[in-house]
Length: 81
Image (cartoon, rainbow, N blue to C red; front, side, top):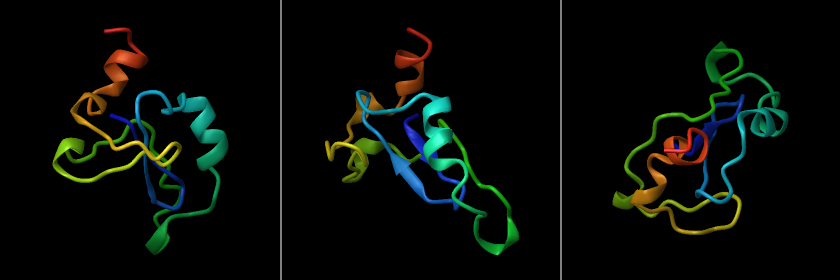
């Protein structure tokens, strides 16, 4: 699931080629400040998201349109399935 929430609770969606490791993404997105309403740090890696093929989601890194194959990215890229 190639969605990352930064510490401010903003969603960042990635394609298979651009999805960063947890360590890389935390360095960039994990310490931007606290989220809204006093919730503290809202950072989340590999977060739930709606099916990409049903909407016009774009990769925040390269601009590619996200497809069904991008839905379960974690399983293929980081677990080798």
